[in-house]
Length: 240
Image 1: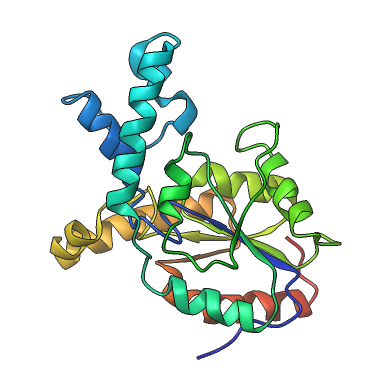
Image 2: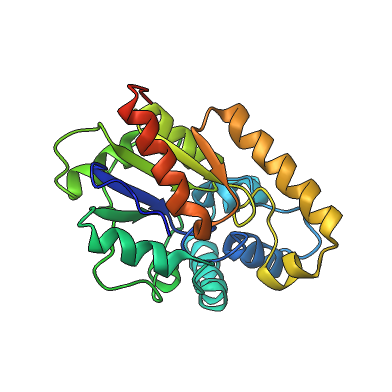
């Protein structure tokens, strides 16, 4: 399998819909259980989804119920996506610093991250502007003690996080099939007719390229060759 050039300074991953939780179903599952019959909340930032649903700021009890529902849903979706473990191990062997980012409130992110290797760190939680502002990406790289932006990569299926990576000056790789744009749990994705999968994948791919990402793959099992291609583009002088 092709390997990533060792010149990469760091790789940042989204958590839900990237490393774990194929289809990024944690937030929509929690919201559908709390408010059945309402529309999908996938496009909303997690911290504001409840407020948008209620039409006002939630009180302490509502917030607690919401975070409990998120943690329960996270426990059900805390499964590695195809290729995630293999790609992480490869990067670890190459001594490429890695971290994951997420915006789910409460303990949900920790529950989702349970299947990940112990060495993979969460980006530090600091005060800053929400995605798509670049703050979280810069803070993650600071936590990894990365000395330069050159050669840093962000991988995610979440458009707002990818936009944050672009705003931060990073190389970006979008995930079409396993992220929130297709929004399908693994079993549901496999159950779709091939033509429907292709339609959803194509639509998500176009959306990500229109955003400005540097490359798009379906899922992390395709990451190795993609990083090799980005490395070649960097060697030819292309800048993010």
